[in-house]
Image (cartoon, rainbow, N blue to C red; front, side):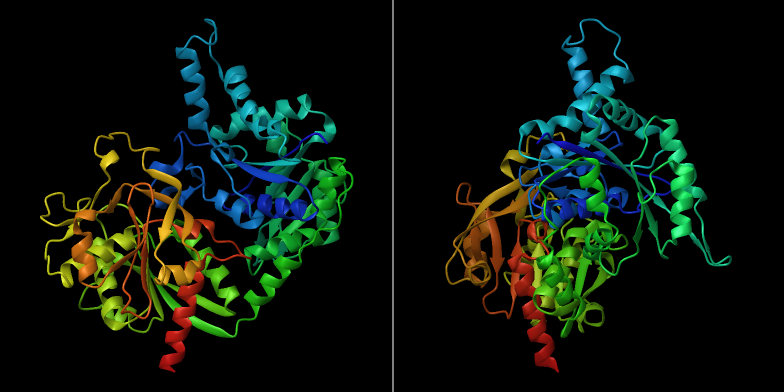
Length: 538
């Protein structure tokens, strides 16, 4: 079977859930026995989101091979349970960088370099790249932004060209729009969708299926009206109604026969009905918890939940596995002090200190770590959270009052966290951190070993600073143990305090590999520890 290509565009408004729709369709096709992957084309000029503030673009998701990508790739991996790669996220910046580099090398033989054909040719090359590997039956491409945006037009033009270059049965276009509900008039309005589809059609792309994001069910009359005015076949207007969980969306879209429409249009033979029993089992556990815990997430970007999207989803996965509703309480690190830590954190069943960059909020994170350590509340630190645990221990147990990370205090006399050796000569910020999957050897008998159940694991990283091994013996002698190290470099990966009920910090990002049906082991055990604390206090 030739590789089939599905394109998902959006209109009317941003944040309608193109990534969720794309991931849900991929899940349904995968459940039919097809080999599926998803790629995201983003219209911004950054090479990747690695240098973007989380308030700008949400979290930066890191793939197994070290690509800093859009957070939607996290949805793709969580829904499909397969890894994505550098090839799965392409930005306008990457496209232009490639074309300009070729021009400087003389690859265009003196021709004038233009949007069409040079930029669009490079876009098309990348859109088809994964399909040429022979590893996938269906490639789903999510086009970022909203139709009508200036920066998205080259992507739409590339789609227009592919619509005619590929065989008709190999190309399918899905357009996601908003059907707003006007409460005063008690009506769903189709006009924004009509205008959005007309805008897309004016650019030469004709959607095969229109997915309508709505908070109220669409009547048959509304569906027929949209089909008539948007020039799509009857039955090809489907709804994506607001769901109680994003993991419910594939089931909703299956009821709308989205996967069947796609299979029919692409003339895919030999598939079976979607096997979604594992997903349904997860949703049953998620919807009917038997316990509840409250966990504080102490971070500097708590005003935007997408900044910690993978962490929040990991708690959903671990909560379902433990039949427990996990209420994550966001706590701004800048607000935490020694004086108010008890009032902010004292009623929590667990404390997670989040990753981040920069000096802002570090002192609050240190206060949160100290409160968790001294009060016996289950503690989990990720990346910077682990580093702040080391700083707090050095200050308040070893007595090094000015202990710090050199990121915050380059002149500290006790740099317990320091810049990695290979980072000290790096001046370029983008794509130069320690990125992607690295091995970690775990000490037998440790909390980490009880959690993972094996001596060697692999987790993903994104950091410049590391535990300073010059302080290893002093810190271990005082009661904080190093239970995980990289076997090749000696980099400290995991620290824990054996005398504490549950205290662990990790340099890597375990949230990036948590899945609905397979929660990350640390999140799973952290929730178990929070449940134990809640039950002990009742």
